[in-house]
Length: 245
Image (tube, rainbow, N blue to C red; front, side):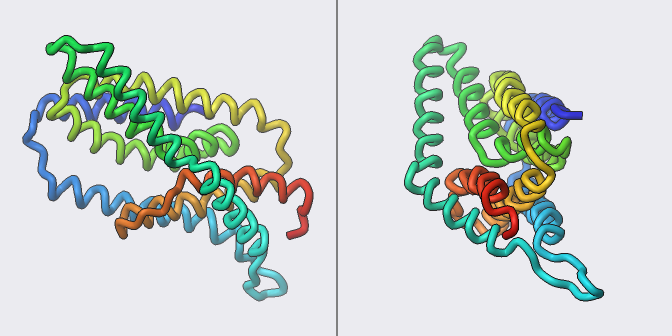
């Protein structure tokens, strides 16, 4: 069912935030660090599970590679476009603007912590590549796996945030529902326009981006995932105009 991933994500934020409200600054940093690391490994394995069927097939009893040129062109052209547009920097500036507006709107001291928790959590939960990729996968492939993994991460973050910033963190679940739900709905709308090859290649290239997210988690690297998102559009165009690669 399309949209299930977003619904579960919202519930995870509310539950994690609720636990954080109950614990109030008693969270164990060592435990949360380990959970984040394990989550990174899970995300990497999720990406690999989508990549391997896309590049390796059995023909004549032998394991052979395929779509390597498609992969290289999609990623190289995509990252050039993403870096040129500065997508990640645009997202960061937009996030900072949201935070500034929310804090100015709620100047009252009794609401300042609520505003900080709401804006900070909304930015973290909505502006990452996992939110975009997961929502598209949920809509196009009815595969909420990535959003389920994101739910685990968001639940831990919500727990930590809510333990210090309070109730506003739980209300960020509404922002997640609106944002990710809109992306999933868009994906459902364009789904009839996509061929099987386009969906297969989109899933394949998207899985590479998922792997990069896991690499960032596990190895503290700084791959700008948002700047790789144009690779998805490039993959669709290649599937239309050069389907044989």
